[in-house]
Each structure stands twice: as C-alpha cells, then as structure tokens.
Amino acid sequence: MLLAATAVQAQIIREVDFTRSGGTALNKNTVGGFCPQKWLDASQIYSMTHVLSPLSMPFNCVNLPNIYEVHILSDGTWKDSSPSQKVIFDNMRAAGMGIHVKMEAIPKGSGIRGDADKTRRLFNSSYDAVKEFSGNADIYYEILNEPELSDLEWGYASFDAFWKDFKNAYIALAAKRTVTPRLKIGGPGFANTQWLIQFVNRLKLESVKLDFISFHYYLDWRDAQSLDQYNGQGAIDRMNSLVNGISSYKSIINPNLKLFCTEFNWTNGDGGLASGYCKVAQNGYKNCARSLEALKLIIDQLGAVDRFYWAQSVGQKNDFFTLENYDASSGKYAYRSGYYAHWMFNSMASTRRHFQSDSKIGGLASSNDDKHHVTVWNRSDLSQILKLNIKTPNASNTYSYRLHIIDASTFSFALGNNKMPHYTTGTLSNLGTIFLASEATAYIEILPGSMSRK
Image (cartoon, rainbow, N blue to C red; front, side, top):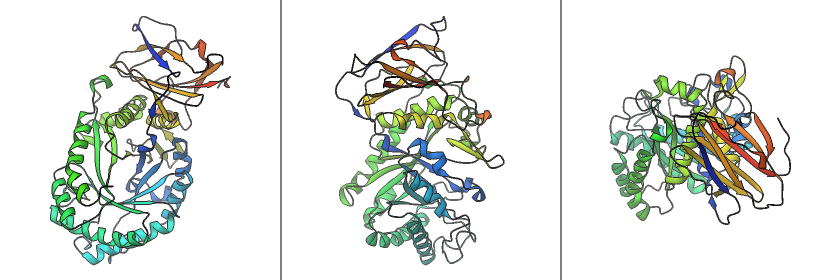
C-alpha cells in the first residue's frame, strides 16, 4: 500500500545499499516445521506437499501416532494406521523436506513403560516402518517429549523412571544406527532445564552417544505490549544454559553433538495454549510481523542452536498455533499470516545485506546476483510512514518492484486465505512511501526489467 506522507507519524527513512560488497549468509536452513499428529484427524490427512512446498522449509518433524491398542500393541509393537504414514513421508520428500520423527510418549497405563523388552520393541518396529517409508533420506529420530512435565500424558514422575525408558529406546535405535548411519538419534525435548545436568551426567556415565539433544522454547510475547518492548533474552539465557550444560558431554563423548530446539514459537506465557490472546494474535495480521521478529532473533542471537522447528507447521481448524489450518468440512486451507512470514523469509536471497533495525522498524535485506529483497515490519504500537532509499548495483538498469503488504486491509483469517498475498508492482524509482500500521509487514522483491501487475 503506497500512500503520501500523512500526519500519522514523521517519515522514517532507511537506506538499503545493495552496491556494497560482502554480506553474510541468511541461514535459512536453520528453521523447519513441526506437526503433532495427535491434533490431526487421521481420516483427513492431506497433502503436505500442497501446504508446505511454497515455504521451502528444509525439514519437518512429525509425531508418530501412539494411541495404545491402536498404534501400539500390548507387546510394544508399533502398527501403522490407515491412511498409512507413508502418505506423509512421501509428501514431505516431495516437498524437499528432511525427515524428523518423534515418539512423543510411551502411553501411561499400557504396561510398556518400564518394560525393557517392550520399549525396545516399540522403537525397533517404529523405526523399521519409518525407514521403509523414507527412501534414502536421513532420519532424525527424537526419543520422548518434555519428560519432566509429570502431570502431562508424556511426562514422568521421576528422572530414574524416564531414564530407564530413554536408555532402552536408545539401545534399540543405536543397534539400527550401526547398520544405517543415516539414522540420527536424540531427545528428549526438555521443557526446562531441571533434569539437564542429571541427563548429561547419565549420558557420560553410560557412554550414550546421541547425535542431538533437544529442547523447547516459547517466547513470552503478550498482547498488552508491542514488539518494540520485547527482547529475546529468555531464549538467549535458555540457549546458553544448554550450551554450558552439554559442553562436558561434547568434549568427552561426541564433539559433533547438535543442539535442536524442536518446538519454537511465541505465546503469551500466562494461560499458554488456552489463552484468548493466542487465538486473537495468531489469527490476525500481526502474526506475520511477530513470526518475522522471532526468525530474526534466531539468526541474529541464537546461533549456538543448530535447528529450530516451528510449532506448528500444519494442523486443523481452530488449532491456532499452526501456520495454516485445514477445514475438513470445506476441504479448504486457511493460511495464517505467519505462513506468509515463513514464505517471505525462505523466498529471500541467501546473502544477507545490512539493514538498520530499531525500536520502530525491524527488517531484513538480502541479494543474490541481480535479485534483491527487503522485508520490513512495524515494531511499534503506532502507524509509521517508511521511505526506503534503495541503491542497486547496476545504475544503468531499470529495476522494478513487487510489493506485498500484510495488514488488516489485506489479511483476514476468517476469509479463509488460501493463496499468496496480493501485490502491487511499479518501477523502483517511483517507489513512494510505505504506510505500515502497528505490526504490519511489507515484503519487496526487486528485479531488473519490468514485472507483471496483479
């Protein structure tokens, strides 16, 4: 949306100089997705290729179904369901995504917890199926989930009870890894750090060689505050505590150990998933700016973490943490504005250029060859008028722009968005000021020559 300057705010000017040499990698391969199938109606498994391919995410995690006596038999054998998990793995590979699976929990009351033979059989049989479905792709297998949250269905009452199951699962998978090195083993998706030191000490004591250790983190970003009042210090502190906690293990057992954040997103802290704020903000246009802010935090300040999995990539109607929802009754997809944030991020060129972010405007700029991209978002609770002074490498060329705006006038989740956002085009020299409402986003593609108008 291009508007002349108004009295809303004084005009903000940003210089974007693509003529400068150098630049750093944008590190887009750091961020993938996560789909917990327990919140997905198995009878309505849909094409992840259709949903996720435009995002170009490099990997995606899925929870293997684990309902007792449906997917997990009494002797611990894992059983494929109908429709087959092969559908999901085929679609992931078709979308160019690496495969990460998780057995979130050994069901409580099943008689399998604490039983070494049954636990090993569960992880043996589930891996055999995943291997068959995954072709020649690398497989990351994550053992268990948030074990320290004892009151939840996947939690444990004590560390020792958790460790017994974790170790037996590891024994089963480690035997597979000796035959198939493309299998990578890790876990356990810690929700906090209360068991971290015990876990690391036990890994060292019993010479357990993991390929990755995983944890979860949700940014506490509340509705009462705007983006300029946030920082990522909590995430930075969590990362540093994990890096310090696993340092001795890396030096003694596995110097190539990776650190994965297998659930990452933003919420409001109090009330968690049940809070009204999550539903309002995730369904609105501000989800885009907040998702971009979180992605920028990842690449700027959380570099010691090797992978982040956006929770969640796909889901069903009213599952408000997802980037998109599938409505089984209509058979249509509804994209949240956070979907467009990941589309913008992954569509940007791979070489990052300088962009001045501050309390009012956040942004990323990148270029490759003669393709240039600028993504900006309003971090304040006031509307801003932005003027971009963009310098391109070849002054003799005519450049055009394609401008996408995500705000209340262009986005409404209730309308069932199922396509990429509308855009306008023009000659770069005629790019005027850009009006950005509070937490609105603009994405600009710049190419030599002319572009078609939509």
